[in-house]
Length: 506
Image 1 (tube, rainbow, N blue to C red):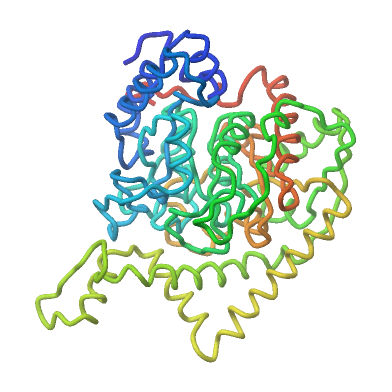
Image 2 (image 1 turned 120 degrees about the horizontal axis):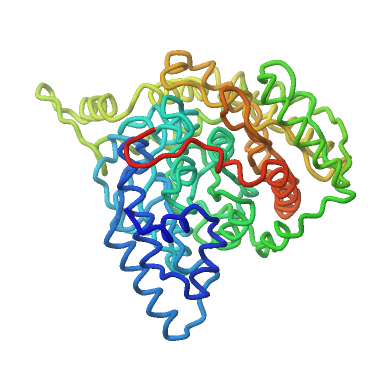
């Protein structure tokens, strides 16, 4: 284990760790070793990481220490370690997307956001566990076993990015990268007491993300504070000519917005369709209390209706599988990845059939079948085409709502973390966990989730804010203010109330 000062430092925010590095109170090598020691101590129980790259992380840390000692001007987060979801390709580091289909694959290039992390000097600790090809709401469909929630290891950490959220929530990493297709950054944040941000679609490059649903996928920050998310968001955002959907907008002043902590005159819209039936009473109670805190600080609470959000879940589960079935067609045993050759009649068709049968898990197969059916002749207009029309209606609901308010609010997830195995055999119940987060992906608008308090069994709940496309700064303004208000009320960060994880003990 690390010595006491470093052990304490890893429990601080990334911003605090960066400040300690600049002040010479620690080195990046010491800080990185402390996080690697933490991973060694607790990840055998949590399974947040699929791969830990000790040598490369320490080499980056040592390089940053040398450059800092030489007086070189460095990025604000230089030397602060980070974890990366295993759906983001990393050169010469295994990238599996949580699937046996890509077991052992070493990409020949870095995703654009990874290139930015390396250029800024953030040691990459390793790759985090996830639902296979990002398909799931619990990180139980990973081919490499489920990740466990650091608050209660009998419960799920959310999905599909449960590994990143669990790593940040258990102090294994101060920062992480996640991806959000229908809530896979925000929902894990809610159930692990962390902060997760889905940026405006196109504001962070998707180049190098293993695509599930190309019109929905978006990478973003997973952190312990709103300010940390803002700092990481500023680093990874920006136009990328490798991504045809990349926006050319300048990167916003997200950290400044997070530090402002001023919501006077801000109009916060409460989405009527996302707070009633299906939401646990204690989750809703923490949501109402959070709104009261904002109102006491000068925000105006307005009730708004987004009637087509009622149909968003159904539309999403036609659009997403349709795009996924197309994107995953390349995993056929012919070009790269797993190849299974049957002993009898090893024709191309039989190799593809055997490979996909062995390489894909049940949830991936389920969504491929659903998507292929929705796109098939005679059903395209009835299913996929109709879902796209609903998507347009959801976008219009957002447009109308943002004419009345500055941001929209709802609970992030309808319940706290459920127990491992509780919903594995009930896909419909599993899909309902994303009911509040999916509309943002259909419309491409940004969203943030931050802790709203403790609900059932002392487990964390989350509150979600949504802003118009390209107005991500509003999320950091309201999120930073609410975080400060709630921490004053709690007497410190919510994570400080989590059960201690040391070694293998609970």
